[in-house]
Length: 256
Length: 377
Image (cartoon, rainbow over the protein chains, first blue to last red):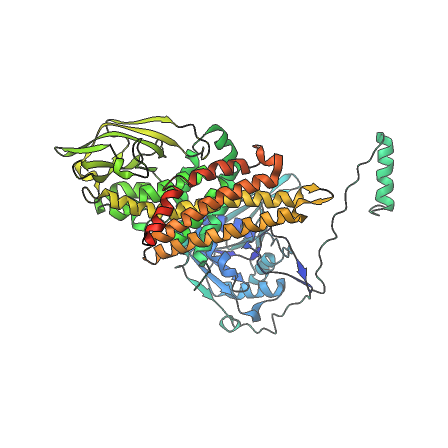
């Protein structure tokens, strides 16, 4: 089974975000595998353990992504492809085009990705990729079963479970709860440095940077307003409700 | 000159940190309170490849360097001093001598299970009459047919109650005070474990007395040359000193990080105490000393990895890091004030754990002696 995993390196969710000159400062920040992509890596490794085959990690981003990719290789992925040519960077539209170009060059049965990245949080890249490749996708899975050609995905639906079936080849995205990602073993870390990591450029992929240029533009980046101190309502229940409604109407203006 | 860790070293550090924060840190206070050796955590560490981190893969290890191993010890020690001590004793004092001096057959039989985490190891040198003065060793080993018969006792033995394999020293040539080292399976006839000691700190680490009542082991279990065990374990202790210095850095970091976070949120006189110069100077000194101690550890570990002599630097690192650690823990308690004196925060435990490192694996006094000898005194 040829298993592909799309992976992005993101800020550690524990990091404090500092905006400087309209950009998020990256100096001295710890980067991690996007947690949703980590579920995808773990699920890919479990599929490999169950069905055999190879796990290949594909990624679009700067060379610092290598650390996240090596971690996935240390967890047990077999090889990786990193598009770290700046001509290939852009928005979700661009990234989906680049991933599709990489993936078209190789055989695959299933593609796994995170449901979204914890930095931009758009949740678009994976489903756009499925569209680019003309294959079905099942998103936000909390359980995945592959039997022969048959893929069954389970996902939360407002407290119920929705069961979606598809046939290979398919793209699925991982939601929290899909699995508990393993720690890379220390022997795995040592082996990871010897596993193949291929760097690809726009030329390698036959992509014209002009055709894949971003369709969106970031016009401003700012932090949310600091949270104000909360207010505890006093008095009997009726008074409290009256004050709450009034406050929602006049102070926070969330109801008309 | 290159002060950067390699990607591999950073990945090992980050993985061990993540593991230690999830699997060790939340339980450290409880293990300390109940003097509980975290057996199941060692099983998990074994599966991760930690228990043979600096041992080559062909002997069941992960084949990492001393720098990576020291980073791992620091991270485990930051989460729990006692767990760090037991880890360090297993790797530096039990695995390393077998790796360095064992025959191929001994490595296959004894090192592979230790390094792959299937068994726990221990090193038994100290005796009631012998500590810094290894010449005072009273335990004897005599050859009887094809077996060594070992008689005596060992004290303060880390991991002794849980180990399946103990590397120990015994007098083999009473005339010339010749000492040899042996690999002893703990299920050998005559091997007994005494009661675990009630300790000030490092309480998650198991420390016991071993009673060797005519323990019989195969003749082939002599480790290294006959009568020359003395020199051999001195070099074992060199490697251990670098690692235990890393443990001191880890414990100091726990105390410092707690104190820093506390100082930034504790308010007095209308501002956080981190705004007061008296506290700032303490925190600045703490950060400085931890960084310098880690540099000393890293230099000694790097020399080891380059295959160069590192005895002097190992003593520098051990002496500086251990004494620095005790001082940092004291300062951390001072910053936390009354809260620092309570068991609700880790700093009082950090102090109790720290003190051991000024004593174990060569006291501060012995370290100064080693350094002075290198100066030609």
